Length: 411
Ligand SMILES: [Zn+2]
Image (cartoon, rainbow, N blue to C red):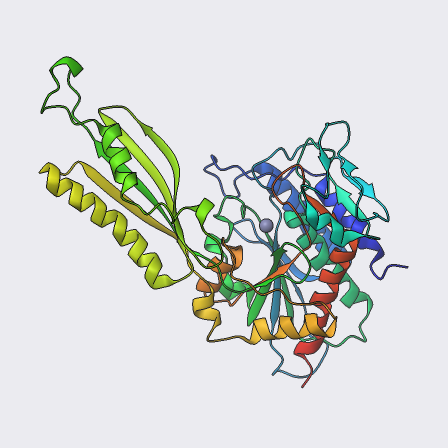
């Protein structure tokens, strides 16, 4: 009945393997669990008939499918997904399958006491008559991004089984450590050899993302002068107080909890300190590159103003850029975005094109030279126990991959 009988089976097989990445690791990939999973995946890619399957030194598994047409003008297209899961229990995932969901009932997540309700998660109402896959309440599901992995591999398998579908050269990549923000740092764009690519790593049906935040981290260290509080007058410099005063200088509005759309922010992540020494950790985010630069400069200016007033350099700011808005590059080469939009329209899927309030592996890969917007993989409520996915939406994501491939070789 379904067009892709292996898709759900493949997805269920993948999510049962724990592939959580490890932020505190020094190795690449960050966890041996990812390495083992990627090795199995490489074997599977060979078994379904993909060519030139190899593991790159940063952990990515690359694979290829050669063109079956004689037209060198057809672009080489890549599809990319990550295999790691987010910072939430990813061991012993025991997915539940809810067939023919009615679009209104609560779904009990195993015996955990947690449930999915339409009150808390109105998105459930979209899924009447769908088959949903949920967690048992003790883990995340890992549809982010095992759904993307399963969709890409199923699409590749479908093309191999249906040589009557004409396509150009195709490239596939599966990688580690997206969730800890470093997986794509060394993506080998040249070896990958695509003209443009897509990450299959978005959420609900129709998502097509080609604008992301610009992102930086900021660490503010504050040196105090601690003396006995009884004799502190005109002598003590309390580093914690300075930290509070510093934070007060930032506009209250520009915080994550007060912003939406294309509004950027400074997000205070951590405060640590005593009268002698204090540290503030921020992340800085903005879609607009100029405003992003101004936000970073603002932190430096605040520190300067305090240092001048204190007559001593007590506040130090260390900024580190993390990734940039891929829209800056993609706006000059919209082939990939236009093709995906057309593919969705052909399939009667309404494209949802909105700037992402975050980043994607594609943000980094795009700046490494390969335009890479992001397409929905289907997951809802990612990164926690309430994560779920519809098998129908996974099929539609697979359809989008195949439609892109077909459209790209049409004149
Ligand atoms: Zn993801």
